[in-house]
Image (tube, rainbow, N blue to C red; front, side, top):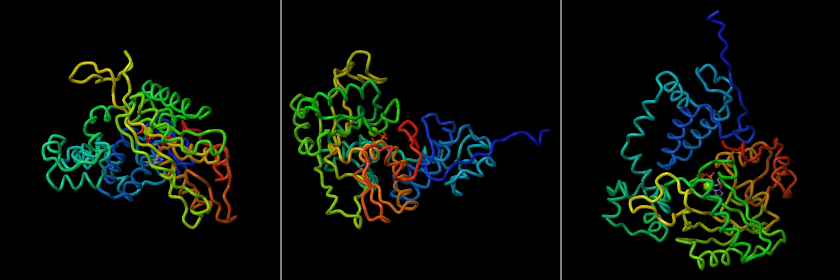
Length: 372
Ligand code: DGT
Ligand code: MG
């Protein structure tokens, strides 16, 4: 009888966009370990390895129960030798020596601290570490030249590394709606990113803005930004203009997934209302009347809205997998602007996310189940 003890063997489809991944993760210990390895690979410029660990973690996030034995993983895709070794260690002894060593590693800690500065990427952080700069104090003291984003990032480091809560996201939304309504009546503001997927906290707040009449959204971003600035809501902003042209772009050089909308990376000065501040609000100087919050704004023409909405809701891995599915399984090219069908040599239109999933031959997955 001991031998016939039931142990469920899991199986799940191989692309994250074929799976329903809610926020309720039954294998957080395992996925945290794999995510840390992914993060380390990304911070070391090894993106391929990073994706492999992200895929492995995502496959486990989709399982309906905690894994207790390696033998349950027979039908789970994306688990390479390295990931399996880590899973085995965690299942057998509660932790992976490799992951624990990484957590303690000075280089990893330094990479995290330095890339935790808004405006500092992997390359800059790596260069600084090479110069012996491992902490914020050393950075402030040794004073390499910082650009405008990095100066803002360093100045607001604590705030920007404190998770943004839903109430704060709602407060930012109210400001963005007021701004949009004032500079372009009828503009529609949609909360995207992690908050649209139901997350309780985020590292920033992301918004997609459009207008139901095609073309009316043109030139909106500069107006929006100057309204926000004039009202004292901006600590920092950098705006990129729209560079996407379907005809010029063409399928031969498909729009890289993102970045071609009018887009604004900003740091908001968000007034703190009593009772809204999260843990740590106020800091050393006692309660402060405001906190800094990272806010991303994207403007899309209504004709591309569904693609933008799908492309900016995330998770990042879910997006990556959607594009991989489109390319490898459908001979299509998906971006945040459009879907091109190479077999029919034409763009496929869509005015809702549901239509895009249908074009892709995928079952519709709502935002709350895209937490791969
Ligand atoms: P968070 O903010 O850490 O709680 O999590 P998310 O899922 O909101 O991630 P975030 O804010 O980095 O990005 C929101 C989504 O937007 C993300 O799932 C992928 C998508 N996205 C669109 N364009 C870009 C881009 O240019 N860069 C990045 N990193 N993501 C983009
Ligand atoms: Mg976000």
